[in-house]
Length: 88
Image 1 (spheres, rainbow, N blue to C red):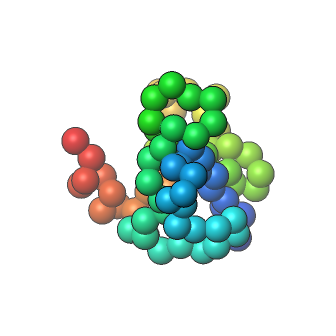
Image 2 (image 1 turned 60 degrees about the horizontal axis):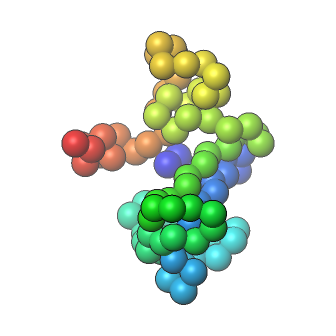
């Protein structure tokens, strides 16, 4: 994820006892944040991940507001280019 003072992320539903970071902490690419868990009101293990720019939710795959839809290719992905080589 590109860093910047106007970009924030939220991650939740980690295993309660295995969170390895704290609120407000800066992390490096590749740093483990915690382990997937079943915390909160959920039926399957998963991680909720949210990205905000200037307080507004953006799709990290397009850099655009999610309402832009799948067909809008005008955005720039927020992921580091190497990330795409790791995706199936």
